[in-house]
Length: 341
Image (cartoon, rainbow, N blue to C red; front, side, top):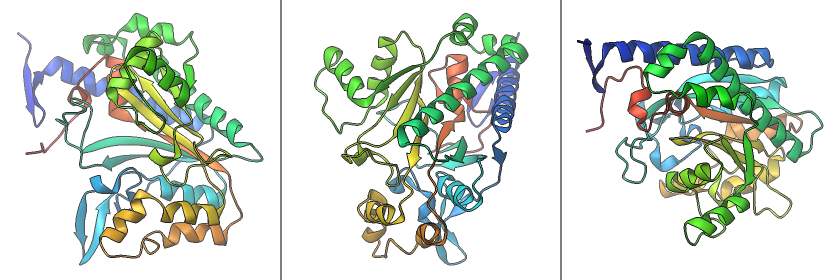
């Protein structure tokens, strides 16, 4: 009889728990090697930040007392990495924990959310490149990185991956196929042919992502050029300002696994976009001046010459779910000391 091991996540087969540790280790090693091979330098960033570290959703930020001042647990190291790229003109990445007040049992996204997860974030400068070319490079880097991880798993942890439910033949087949790329507008057309009525500006949730993945036979799918209104304020906008040079990577079965974009380099535009953003609205709701917590970031564009840059973030646990064909994010976590009440 298989031995059992009990953690904050529940009770599991010890053999499968051991296999998960191996798969996570092999995947993370492959990520680091692939990025270093592409001339990225790993850096450490802070998990204790002001509200500027809540790059995704300030309303899902974990707030805490920092020696009498308000602080937050970082949702993303993006602004810290951007500062390094702008000042040093070099490619950097971090492997850090991201904290978001989004419970696992979210009824809209059951099995996909964690309050704390591992986030891999590369950021790099682009020299004399147009925004579309920058976006192409971000997409190409993401695809190379995912395929490097697949190769590493197949060569170093195939048995463990299969034990956890991974489809080895499927993963092997992806190495010979280009990932598919469509625009957000094309995605809406696909959805409107199959699911109902979608309009420009609608966000895409897991239901829509799974329809799109089914449409492309579960090949990983890049969706580009999302509407400006539903993305982070400093993303580079298209000439009509309706869309941004952004990309989400969808993988089966947990959907969006990585998100990236080209960043705006014009400081005056960034300040304007910021003051119109959801995060500025959040700060104002607390009676504060939104420019204060972002002062250091905005000063970069006065102190330094403009730098076109871009990057992406990979949710490591969702990537593990993709490798092991899991529909439950808790099956991808190595250890967890606390559960939401």
